[in-house]
Image (cartoon, rainbow, N blue to C red; front, side, top):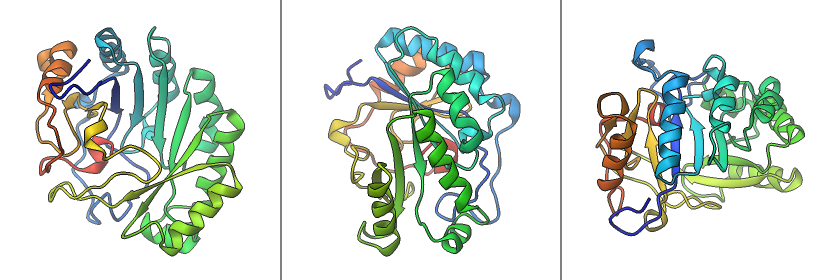
Length: 266
């Protein structure tokens, strides 16, 4: 598929839940969030149907996100269903890694190709404070499990406040070098004010090279993270929703006052 600016759109990011087992300070408000009703969240069959339609339109790259996708019950089953769709060439996941130690091998066996794991600091106390209670050691064991399972390459997403030269970022970079991990630095974004920048070590945030659409856990296809337009696959059907989002894809991201990172997939 090509949008009106001649960009090749062949990548769909799919959020499978708005729930998460961490409460990172830059992602969720301290007072908590209003969760989606379970009946509003797409079933595995609905998600698989969207994938099949997307493939028929020319999409071949898919990323599973959340919230935290590994808290979705029977997530391995969903991965198996998606990987079985003919035409899916690249199937990946973004995760905080907390549950990855036990799920890495089953995910690989089900057809997942690779993972991006969030890791902003190697200081256990800072990690616990930033995530409001998370255990850094669980993430580190998850990283090891992902490498052992062959979810290659294992990429690390490191959020930075100001610069990739910050103390914690440099420590994560060195950790990546020593352990054969690809580290990507993501500058903290603000949906409401439209603040974002190109990911260091990746192409996210580069509007001129954007190749993706997004779908929320309740089936709203979005042209861009920094755009408020949404098209429901339940109301319009998957093909019309995807093509409508494609037609409305902006040249550059602007702002989004209707969504949040935890329910779009960051």
